[in-house]
Amino acid sequence: MDASLELARGDMGFSAAHFSIHQGRSERLHGHNYRVRLRVRGSIGEEGTVVDFSSLKAALRTLCAELDERMLVPTRSPRVRVEETADGVSLTEGSRRFLLPRSDVVMLPVVNTTCECLADHLLGALRERLGRTGYRLELHVEEIPGQGAAVAE
Image 1 (cartoon, helix red, strand yellow):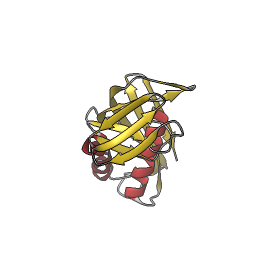
Image 2 (tube, rainbow, N blue to C red):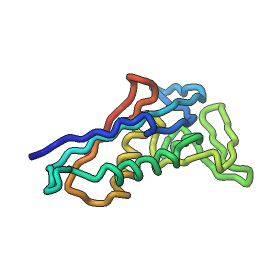
Image 3 (cartoon, rainbow, N blue to C red):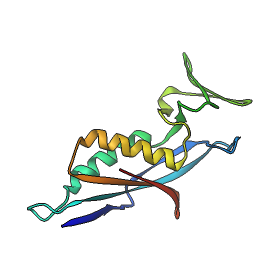
Image 4 (cartoon, rainbow, N blue to C red):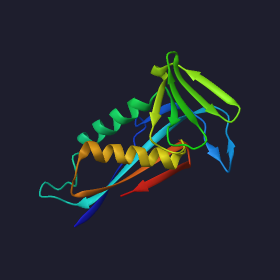
């Protein structure tokens, strides 16, 4: 028998700054208190479970902590030039230039810091940590209540 389990806890998330580029226009620098939800689908095992929740919670909390209280920077954007300097990280987008301390920045291998890209990044990183399993994952990132994106395997 297959089952679907969900982790949707108030303590699963991160606070971060970013700007996204939509339809050729760049947003102003701003931040969100992101919430992360995880759905697991798979067969119920002999012990009556699909997966050990504690391992999922630990892995997801670690990934969220890596993004918490940081500036999220897309390193694959054709519109954002990212350079590491002696002073930190320099971002250039259009006529704007940001110089940030390296410790305040998380450089992500994404084209944009949208909820869709963040969810895809987190799902990939989570799967890498967990390795191959007998269950499928779906991860949702919400930037404000009721507004977010989900990606699934």
